[in-house]
Image 1 (cartoon, rainbow, N blue to C red):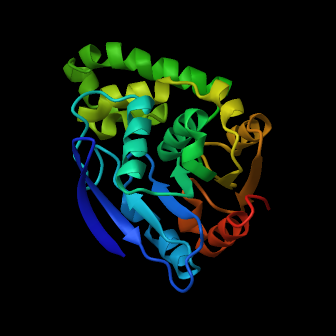
Image 2: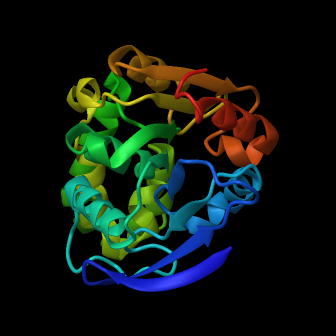
Image 3: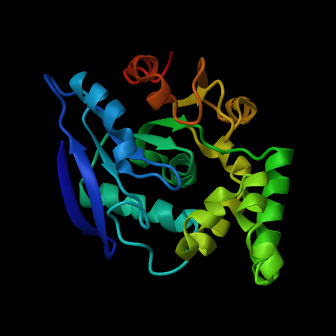
Length: 261
């Protein structure tokens, strides 16, 4: 693995390059991490696939890890454009994007309009379709953004702040105060209507016990994506490749040569 820092689209960007062993495979894997995560989360999987001939790049998205924060509030479109610039700067071809959660949402946004950039997609625990429960969660988060801060100035409520956010599953909103406007923009965009436009072989890799992005979301995405295959990892949660590296790597290895399982 080689660690690199490079300015991409005006942002100092940190990324790792994984060199393939033996005869390199045609696909280059581009790993995009989830919210509150960073490129190092991919290391076990990236090293395992590099040992099998698939080289790749794992980068810290703007605002995370070793990459500078965006200059202002970014949407998914901004992040998608950033990844497009990253691919161009490194002259990458035959890219298979491997995106986890937030990173997968960036992949959907980009692939729907720029499919020529990619050969395949691997979406891991990605909230790419909105169920009724998720729509309510977005409404609650947007309401909290405008109402909760004044309320939490009251001394009696200050201690309850984190408990209230945890109760609705909104810890991500509190995690980075400087990225709250970006987080609102990112979760506020419903990608369901874009799925039909993603005409690439797509692997949906899910933990069977994912409580962050439920398997029901994966099933909905499978029905809407034209070329999707769903693979569930028994006993795994929101980070299936960390819970079961061998099975996750094997499923991806089977998917990469033909795009089918």
